[in-house]
Length: 117
Figure 1 (tube, one colour):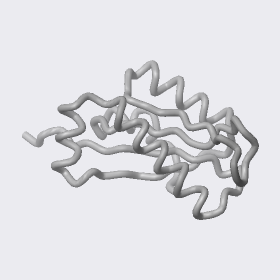
Figure 2: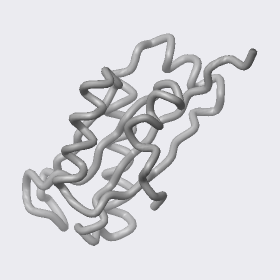
Figure 3: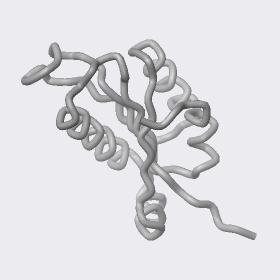
Figure 4: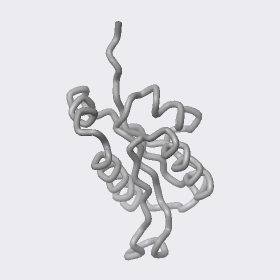
């Protein structure tokens, strides 16, 4: 019987047209924020497996907020990122959502239909 495997997913908004550097920074914020909200044992197991991460896209804020609600109801660790507005975006712009680390199966129930970046 195979042990559970873990991953982290970061979902970004396609409609914002962020530069590659801005996008990378927002993904990093979401990854770290969600990681901080995960159970210590899950973080340790995820790290032992190599810390698998997947970056997916949604078309806009509404879809991202719907995913946040699904992750909330599934009791997954998460972090919704809003920009401070120092560079490319208006202050308070919701940019991305980090989910996990958590079990692959549980995360896929929330994000499995999304496309990769």
